[in-house]
Image 1 (tube, rainbow, N blue to C red):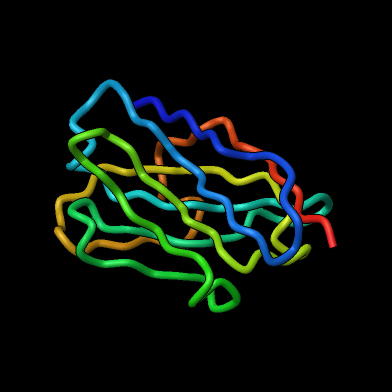
Image 2 (cartoon, helix red, strand yellow):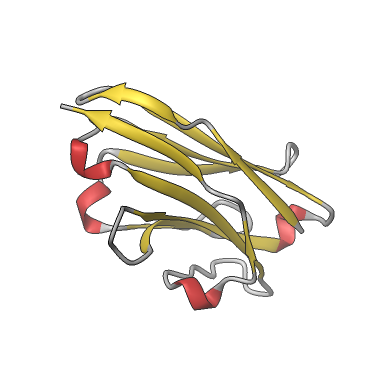
Length: 126
């Protein structure tokens, strides 16, 4: 499966942004998905994950209540809605996917994923 992330840019603190990750090549409904981010000089960090059917989600503590991961399997797309953005959210955001045989499977480490998008960058200004 090929992943294409989009939606980055510049946003003010307190603002909102939605990232999209479009998948092609395979039946995306068979894949669990996640979002990671990497700030300059830091390791790649888990942000959110969603099961293949969308019924289960998992979040980094610092984004709970602000970020929402969702998916539309009919459109082969995963979304990350981000509200109340903070300068600390500035990073390159990557979407990732892995074929999953379990309906509720969620994965929170980079090594769990087989497919990665190219990353989309956004900056939150204070």
